[in-house]
Image 1 (cartoon, rainbow, N blue to C red):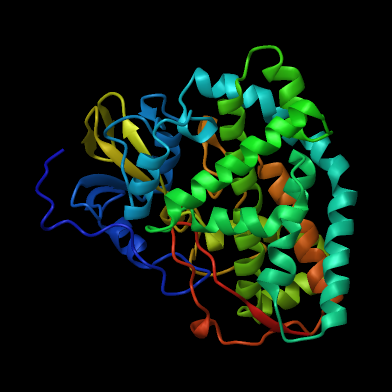
Image 2 (spheres, helix red, strand yellow; image 1 turned 60 degrees about the vertical axis):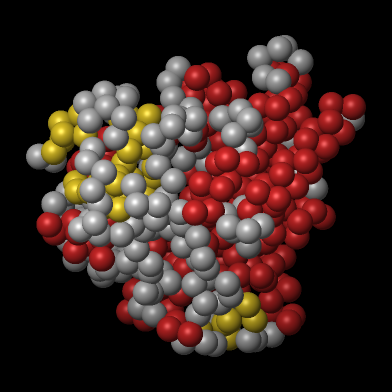
Length: 399
């Protein structure tokens, strides 16, 4: 790949609307489904914006997720800093390729199977109902992030993993700060130390969470050392609460800003599962996934050379006219389950069944309990969270 990036568009692009991806990605997509862009450090990378091309590359074994590859793209300064800080830590799941990825995934996938998640639904409902009771007792206006969207997935993932929810303020803050340029490395190391100590305690006094299961079934059998288990815990804890919380928050804002869609959903709650899929597509939390080519790949009229880095655009793919008609419109009636909000291929989100269950229960219950739910602050006044995963600092609502 040429190193002359003077005339290349800068990547990533900032959102103007909290619950929709930056419009500039669609403009780039209109020029070509694959094109070169410039990262913050001046390095070029391929940006993949086409739906078919994104899915093809996400499933291509010639495309690597190995964060240890020197050509792996750093899409933000904080990411480069964090990558250096955790260089000695083992890679798990999202940072590994086959066959290692398959070995690791098989260790945890039973805990996220459809039957296992179905058994968790009554507990999720109890958590949601308790949060709604607290909101009702407090009265509006109230911040939906702090009172509802964040506590629900935090409580659920804590229960699933066996992490004390009493420590939620600590791990939520460290998770949020891990991509801060100044405080990120320290936050990551503090989170790592916390989970390392938790795992040591579990080794001495086992509990009944997924981490305890991994200790008993994998670590004690010599298939998973503690360093790797800590890395598992970090990935599962962060992914298990942050993204789902942001979909609840931004999805609620999007529905309240689209009253016809909201009215249709209230009129027919059976549309909730389809609405969740459409909201996942519509808010598209993760703009793109970083990858690097292991071999030459000819696709979309371009040749991605071995060693070239790429950013596979999930948000732009979800907004491709080749995928859905009128992509800028929120339409809860459309069949958009084949979106790439959860990724695609072997790295497709491990917790997607859990996320869907939480989102369906959270939206159904919120809209049922508060038929007069409304925004207490205009969308254009919301503070968009800095970082590569979309979100807002708070979402004041009244009811």
